[in-house]
Length: 308
Image (cartoon, rainbow, N blue to C red; front, side, top):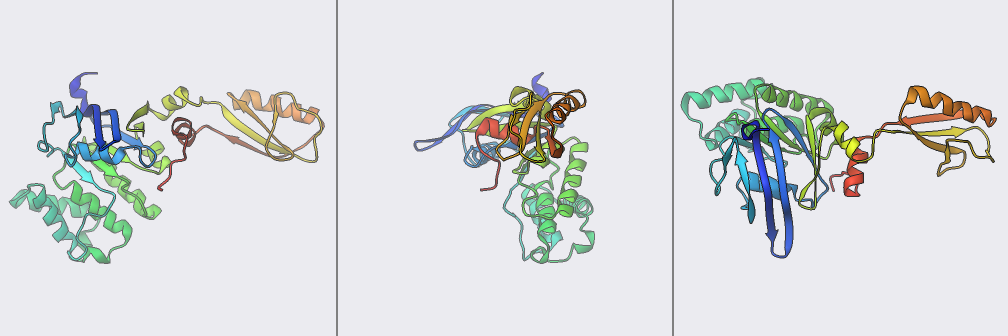
């Protein structure tokens, strides 16, 4: 893949704070037009990585390239839009006043600023609330304003840190519809999230970050192949006590529970169920679980993905 196919890339980024080594050779690739999910346990170094990308922290070593150009110092990041997890908006200003202020922060003036404000009001669905104080809004509405303020300059690369934390399902859907609009216009997106289903359903590719570096990356299917495999886990409970073993099954952790793994549900499961019947027992309950991103994450990092 050529250099121009990457919207953003880091090469062997390293950063220490005193004796604490936070980034240990972080190499990240964001393709043009891609939605990349960035997952990692707390303390993995994701926040420091984002701060390096946005110029808020200077790495000790390594390089950052934005749209094919190496970034030196703090400048040259006009093509990046940051939407932080903490609401970075003014509660005592109206929606329009917030958009105007952040548009100016991003260098917009005159007609360009006015057009960008009108676009943002329509894009967020808040035209009717343009003159209302943002501090009176619901959490979901404030998130939408926060998102708009971070992308007033229509950046080509957008960094999102937990954009849907603490919002209701309807607001979450609205926020992702807004992001889909930006992506359809060509924006490349990095989404940092603790919501595994968001990463699975909303991202083209997933990066798992731990101990200051990328430990795995790929589509969900690729990550499964690299780690836990694609076999289904089957758990069933039989009626009554079972004293003899069942071929193909192992005893579960609970009384009357049996477990096995299968690659093909349609061909293997009927055969295994017949073995249960042959042992003289009826199935009381059965559960078939496909491997998930949570299994991959647990396998790679040794921890559940959680907010705290």
